[in-house]
Image 1 (tube, rainbow, N blue to C red):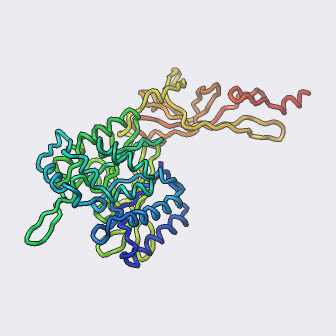
Image 2: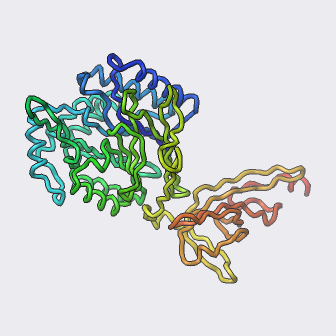
Image 3: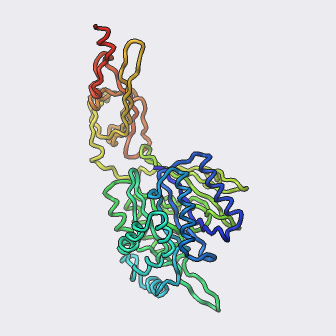
Length: 437
């Protein structure tokens, strides 16, 4: 699965400078020229600029239109846009919100992991709901905000190859403290997400045995230290493999927490910020995640070579974060290794058949990629070893043993007798019939 990750768009065309408008337009053109297509788009909050912009329906519609234009270029539908809110997407002075936030910050315990007055905390994301309405539709938004979020403020999506947890880090954001006629927001290092809600969401995805990506607005370093410690233990137990966030208006890769944390820059131009985005891909065959970073430099979008010490592209082996589903690896093959017949369990990732037309006859060719669940004999498999699968004989022509749990072999069909009908496809060799006639 492949995705584009954006954050902190702060879309406000009437007050944005020319540079911000220009870089957003050039982003559309850059994606179009590079012919970039993905399966999902991730947006990790701050759709508006609350410091200079009201949370109107018109403002929500403007940003939704820009996001939909991005989605169209990327070749995806609006249903494939996954989002979480940022601190700019809530109403800080929502009815009783300040009192509820202060009460929760005072009384919340990570070992219990739930909030008081969750309804108020959810309902205060008025602007975010408006954005969701324009992107996903009013029925979807009403169901999420009136039903699902009031039971669990963290939603999730189970895709074909990977699962995504959408973590709302802003539930306790926006506490305002007045000091000497000045107002100060008390957020950094004081936020919690509700660990029980997180466990409940991850538990519902656990049976799929798929790796998990977390989307969040804030990085782990900005959460309450006790909450962060608890979360990291939970993420490890549930095999979370990467954490994608925004908020800091910077573009960097942090591996200090045991799982990669990718912070993307904003899609706005101003002093002291890094405008950027990333493209990520999970390879089910290689059990790896690759992230490529792109930034806005000198009025151009291009590869951000300072993303990490390895350059603009980084790859992580996540095979240790994957639990194999034995029902999925139920196909069996038998290979003679060192004179002994060994049995292996696995699954067919792809199997193709085609007709190879010659001058006189046509033969049935085939290719196969088969993923074997590792056991004590897997390392003995060699090139040219043969086995039977789907009533055909296959010869191993490639071996990838870099993953921890599996070995992937690339095979070709062995044509033991080109005059025989192909058993699996049932295609008769008409040339042979004509010659015999």
